[in-house]
Length: 224
Image (cartoon, rainbow, N blue to C red):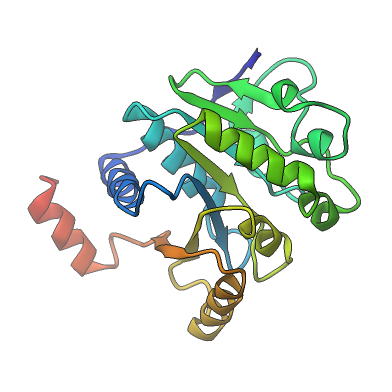
């Protein structure tokens, strides 16, 4: 199994507390929610960062976690690691060029493994809709406590809807002041049509200096 080194995961106190809270909410959502997909309405809302942060937080609590980068069109997680040589990823497995065990990478964080997106295929939605992806998720659920799937923005492509069909639950990441309420509601309705339960929404990229309510809350209760 190839070993990789994740980078850019140093978080400040507030971020750590936020991810711990998210982790707790996920853990209390029910033992049946093992495969959880994270998506957003538009690109650049930070869903990949949240996916990685959640996976790290779960792993730090002793849970065995597999993070799957299923954004086959424009992977962000590929920039969060250092590794020599060629890494076979999800697209290699889905296209029959590799087996599951050939794509799983061990990280420097105990209990956390990852599958990267791999090369950009010409038909992402079709690959994700095949039985091989469903088999991957099923097998991962048997071997890990949690499977976190970083999916493309649902407001841009249908890939996330395809992924949701084989996952237990979903989380919508919304960047503050970046997307309209109507558009988020439309994406939420698309998620509901997949019949994949929505656990909640993560409000991301909140400006703590401008938002006095959040600043006061964390100041009073978290000692900053």
